[in-house]
Amino acid sequence: PIQLKDIRMVPWARAYRSILNNEQKCLFGMARSGDREALFKWAGPVAHGRSVLIAKKNRNLKIHSIDNLRRLKIGVVKDDVHEKILLSRGIGRENLVFSFGKTAVEEVLRELDKGIIDLWAYGEGAARWIANQSHLKGKDYEIAYVLQQTRGYFAFSLDVSDTFIQNFQNRLDKIMTDGTYRKIVHLYLPEDFSRE
Image (tube, rainbow, N blue to C red; front, top):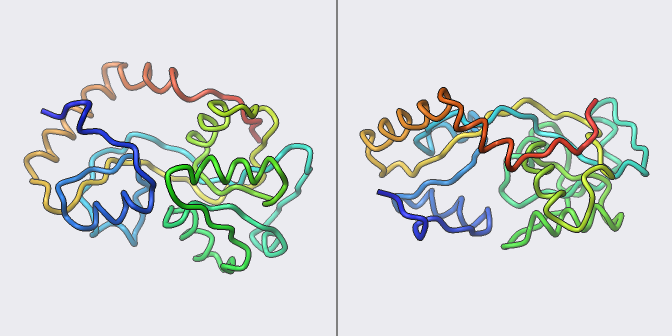
């Protein structure tokens, strides 16, 4: 059985590389996308959300299309799905400000707060939680643009057995249907960003 001591918080880029090295690991949570499909084994989905661009309300940014982003600086976590989404939509690397390391997400949020970057590309639910855990207030931010709908999964390295994945999925399905999952989500994901 998995013990609490087996769970570690590490920088996203390091975790992503580690799971690619087939070290019998799991990364949670990962957006499942076409370019990642064959790289991992999957259990889920555990989250349905949106990949969004977050701005400070007082900036009053009006973004109507991807073309409006070409004049802005966007904070992203290195190797995160949001970097890939923006690049695939034609946003150049010169528009992206990369953060990496253990405090990458917090660094992006600080840069947004200080006006160093115009937007933060991230998953809506996780961004709400992070903003509310910091000294900053989630109500000072808003969704400026929705990039796409996403689904979050547990991603396992390819060397994890299919039997383990199936057992994990079965247990996950159980907590999704018996109400346990919903209780956990309500504990950790506040609704403080203004919605469209």
